[in-house]
Length: 242
Image (cartoon, one colour):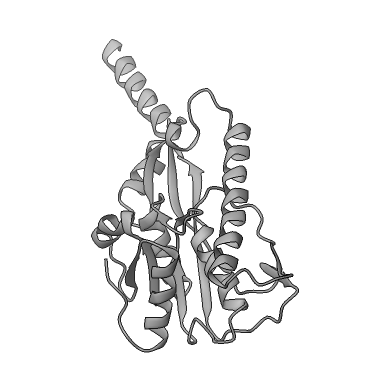
C-alpha cells in the first residue's frame, strides 16, 4: 500500500511538472510585414513611386511555454527557440514595463530609419515621412523601414519585382547592428515568399548555421550595403553572402 501511494505521488508530481508554468518562453516566427504595403509608410511633400516586389520586415512572436510538453515541442522544432524568460522580460521589470521599453526602442528605430533614408537621398526639402506600424517592439525594424522609404522616394523599383526580407538595428551613422531571433525570422520570411534575406553582419554566422532552403542570405553592415544588395539582386547578380 505504501509503495502504491508513493508511485501514485510520483505520477502526480510528474503530471504537475508537465503542465506547470516554466521560467522560459518560446520564440517562433512572427508575421512578415511588407513595408511597401498600404498604410505602412506615408510620405508627404514628394511624389511616391510604386514597386512590383515586396520588402518584408520580419518579426518574432514570443509566447509562454505550455509546461514540459510545450518545452519539449519547442526543443525539437527547428522553427522555434526556448529562451529564458529574463532574456525577454528582465528581472525586476514587469511585463508592462518591458513592453513600454520595447515600444520606445521601436519608436527610436522609426525615427532613425527616416533620418538615414532622407540623408541618403540628400535631405529633400519639404518631405515628411510617418510610419503606421503598430504592435511591434524592439529596434530591429529600422533597416527595412529605411529601405522602404528610399524605395518610395526613388523613381526606380528597388525590388525589381522580387520578394526581399531582412532585419537589422539601424544606427544614426548608417551602420546595421545585430538583433535576436534570426532563425525564426528566416523561417518567417521564407513562409511569406521571400527569396532573399538581408542579414546584419553580426548575425551572419548564426544565419549560416540555420539555413532555410530557397532563401539566399545577403550580408549587410551598413545602409549602403543594403542598398547595394538590392541593386545587385535587381540586376540579376548575387549579393555578398554570409
